[in-house]
Image (cartoon, rainbow, N blue to C red; front, side, top):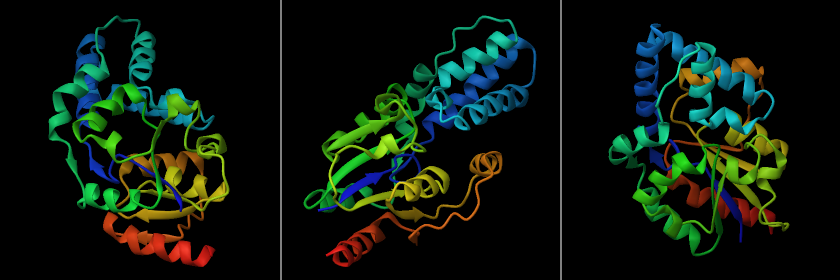
Length: 231
């Protein structure tokens, strides 16, 4: 039996709720501050980057980021990212028949939903697709007290089983998990401009996943191969 950590956004779910909520928040805050949405977005991104450099979980607390930027502009607002997410959550969709794959994997392995996103934001997607029924454990950065860039994130459960990380982010799903002894499977959905900013800011090089795939369903064969190798 393997312990399999699986990322959420753009790994098993195409989640447009958070990006759309943030875009709406940038527009609302730009009107209040009388600056452009692009300026607000850049300030939020800069703050996000500064926090992930120190493995600070607040990097993924979007309400905190918006509030911090608003204070910089000395303005008040009533923007709540979670409320905005609720407006867009129905636009999310499952990728690659992932629920069928998860059903198969869970018959033999321990599945852990592993996301940097705070539970208050991710719970809406989790509930929409009833993901709690497919995973043995759900770990968010606020529950773990650290990001996926910290070894502590992968301490649960505490045993010597084969541990695998599956995700689409070269930094948080490959580079850091490999440092902590996990086998890594990267789902290549293309590197977004936002991830490129993260890679450049952290000056991360030599990102080498153990496996690169295009479809989540390919994980079934790879996990069997890894298990056979371990025996």
